[in-house]
Length: 256
Image (tube, rainbow, N blue to C red; front, side):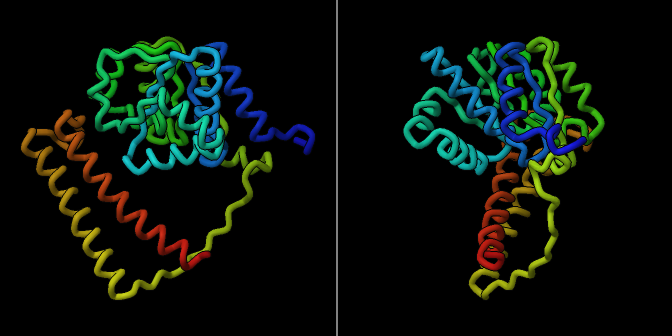
């Protein structure tokens, strides 16, 4: 492949938008950093401009991802347009997906859509309707069961188109640079260590509560979660997100 044949991020995103417009069902199996989120934001913007009464559902994995998406909307469309789009959008975590049984939407966006693998989530989405569906994932086939999930999506919403562009593809096309890996030690002050220990204790507590809830529900390690255990799991993941953001802030301080 010579340099004239290389794809740009804009080329990929334009193709994705055209595919979603034409086929209405799309899986973006793209590597991190290629622009999956931007495709979703641009799709909502385009649809809302043509259909002002549109209703969007954006499903994310963790509560802290909601803020990341708000930033993505603002960066892509500016504060005013971002708020207009978000006023037509429900942003919810997978752990709370059950409240949307039987609902209908102009567009559903499943961020990190590989989290739809459980039987419970697939049972929920089987009751939902959407004019368009966009599933975003960088790891759809990493666990070897991507095809099973795709078949469930087909049964629920109809046939999907798939666009695959991995991290190595992005590097080969100069969309992403070859990553440098640098190990930077983080030294915490006594106050920061106390905060970190408190966050870790809370994380371990929520983890224990989740596995206790699974035990009380009689679930084996290979069983799917129930609605109740999904809720407890969401609290465990949220606690993990708090500790991750704490360490992320300290890492930025050191690396910056």
